[in-house]
Every structure is written in C-alpha cells, then in structure tokens.
Length: 391
Image 1 (cartoon, one colour):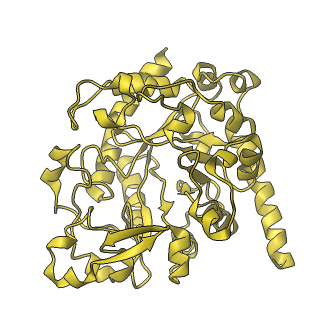
Image 2 (cartoon, helix red, strand yellow):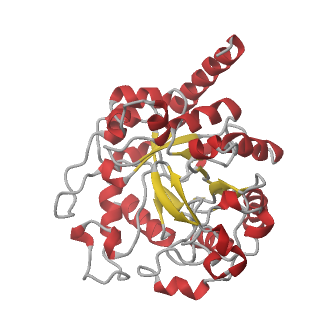
Image 3 (cartoon, helix red, strand yellow):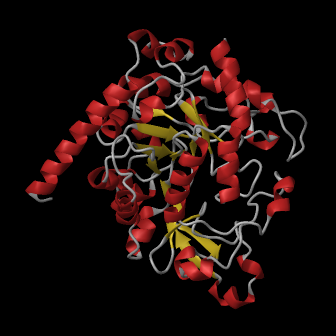
C-alpha cells in the first residue's frame, strides 16, 4: 500500500467512526438494554435530520422489493414495496453482464429467477461453475450481454411458498442498476418523499477474478448520478468485508457488512486464507474492526436470537448491545410471513404457503433493540412496527 493510499484509508476510517458515533449513538440506558422500548425513545421513528438519521426506527426494508407478493428484483416488486410504505427498498443484488453492466438478480445463476430455460437460443449457455466453492449448474449473467438478458423475463423464485406470485411470471424484465438509480429519482419526485435503496455487491471476489470488479462499477454509477455522498439515500451492503472496505475508499455512502451463520466464513476470507468465521466478527473486537470502515451490520436473524433444536426461539445474544456500543446499526434479515420461514412457535399449520403469526415474530425481534429489518412483506412490518411503538 502506497503512502497516499494509506493516508486515504486512515482518513476514511476516521470519517466512518465519527459518522457512526454521530448517527447511531444511543443513550447509556438504551445500550444497557436488549429491549428496544427505551431505544425507540432515544431514536424516535421519523426523527428529523439528514441521511440515515432521517429514517424511521426500526426501519422497514423491502427485501428485494415486495417479494412476498411479486417476483423479486423487478420494478413490479420495487414499486409495490413503495406502495406498501417501505422505508427503504433493497433494489439491487448486483451482478455483472458479459459486457460489464450491473443488473439486479438474487444470484448470477438465473435459471430459477428468469425464463431463460424456455429460450432455445440460450440452451448451450447452460453450464456448471464453481461459485464461492460450490458447484452450481445453470445460466450465469456473466455469460450474457445486457441486450441478451433484456430478452428474458423474471419468474417467481420459490413458487412452492408463493404460488400466487406465479401469476406475474413473465411480466417484468431484468432491471439494470442504472435503471434503478433513475427509477429512484423518478419515484422520489412522484411520491414527494425521498426514496431509499439498499443494493448489495454479490460474490465480489468471484467476479473480480473474472475481470468484472463490482465496486468500481458501483462507484462510477453512484458518482454519475450524484449519489456517492455520506447523506445519499443509497446504503451499500456485502457479505464480503473486503468489498465494503473497497467501497469505503471509493464512495462516502453508508456501508453495511452482511453476516451469515456464526460458523460460516466470508468467501473473501476463504480466498485470502483468513481463518476467522462470522463468530469472530461478532465479538467486541470484530465489531470494533467493522466500525472502522462501515456504519452497520446485516446479521441473519438467528445471530440476534438463535433457534433451539426444535425450531423455537432461544435466548437473545448480546449482539445488539455489543454492536450499539461501537456505533453500529443492525439491520437483520429476513422476516417472511410464510410458515416455513418463521420460528416454530409462530407457525400456524404446516402449509408451505400458509401464513403464521408473523406479527408475534416481528414483536419479539423488535424487542431486542434492532434498528430495522429486511422483510418480504413491508405492509406486515409497518403494522408490526406501529404496534410495537404504541407499546
């Protein structure tokens, strides 16, 4: 690392730490409590101010749009999330095309989220690749030009849980990140309120090795549309800490490190020979390190409240107060209404597409003091938040 780069890193880290303390600081009383009632009093929903501080707490984030009701990562899903009242829309799991454009798909393998299998002209593109160490068979965005991808249409990813969503199969095309940035501005004007988005860099190590680095492409587009500042309504996230560290050098946007199961390892750690697991990242030491270059973490809900062997919820961990102590916000994932995704005590029956007591589950998670949550059902989340804040 050259001296200029080292100085830039130092300045970026200091800027992150100061911003984190200013935006996400909570009272000593709130830090001493896992419960969120006092935290909500110190950080009221709708509090004024710029940037992240302007978002309601707990923040309701539309996971891939309104994917409980429409095929995910489509403008149909994104628009419905706004119609339902989501505070933020996760518009963009970002993966590249062969010609270097960023598009919004859950994964680079698109066999399960598009109608590509019904296109005979692309039959020979089906292949098996090793994606983050896992053999994966299907069609991959990096093997298609943007023009080719635009001939495909989105379909429901989990039809067994959401058969009603299949009604909309084939209606929407794959959006690009640039189209999302334009859509964000259009919707902000149309709705008379600032629309926030929460894109993710997907498999950045994998794509960098293919010569399709994500972070530079993200930064270039954010700069083009004037959305690369600390108060910009674009929160960036990734499961790979090194991707967030790269973004920290390129843009001033709020940054969030996503965290999977405790025994898992971020794939950039695997590639670098770093033996640490997520369990190491959520220790006080690990959280302090993350706070040096990011504003928040996006843990799986099981890191907030582990599940017992029978699928019921156990005792909350100390992750929420530990993260708050170092100025990090927590936006865990993902709340869904359907039975299979809920803790066992909140399920109603055994139907794969049946709804359980998601209001009860929301209340339990909100009570831990989380700052927000990703949900496929923004309308349910907003009603649950209103109940929770009403006491």
